[in-house]
Amino acid sequence: YHRGDSVGLPQPVQGKHVLDRQVEWKTNRMLDRKKLSPWFVILSLVALVVVYRVVPHPPNFTPVAAVALFAGFFFRNRIAAIAVPVFGMLLGDLMIGFYNWKIMLAVYAALVLSTLVGRCIRSAKVLNVACCSLASSLLFFVTTNLAVWLFASLYSPNFGGLAACFAAAVPFFKFSLAGDLVWTAAVFGAYGLASSAAVVRWFDARRLSADN
Image 1 (cartoon, rainbow, N blue to C red):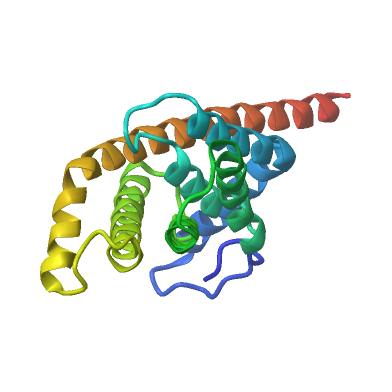
Image 2 (image 1 turned 180 degrees about the vertical axis):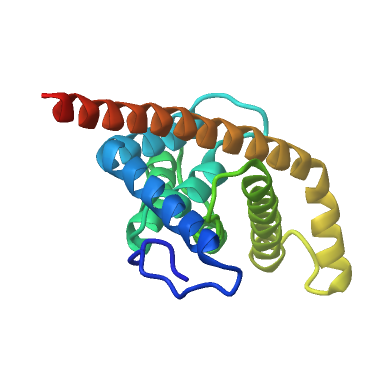
């Protein structure tokens, strides 16, 4: 089912306890979103992308893919989820300068793909997030290097040129993969801490109002 739909789900064959767990998961996600201001999340993610686009950093060790993955996970609206990393990337490009527009489009398309991968994360468990982060890294690597081979005029337009392009990119992929995993852990970890605190405050407020 699509994340963000109503709680009324078909009765699973396994039994009522499975449905209860699904309802509990969706309720917790609703509480997290309700208590975490969407605008605060948007501004934080965009600022993170922009800052690490303009400050010195190791090659490809940036939070861009992690932000796209988290935006796909957090925002129920698909347009909003895609807009956050794309807008942050655009602001960064405005500051540091544009390049080959065809390759730029491929980079932005890869960000959209990462966002869509993030929408597949039903639960922010370590294994789920790590697998999606790896998938996002691979998609970004393949998409952007195909664009370099096609549009940069650096490699011959045949299989040999394609192989040479990817071979030249492999040493940089380790930085991308490490950066994606580290930043994904940081972003989702911050979300877990913030949402846990928000849920605790929500229940405390309900308990205080009930006592009064």
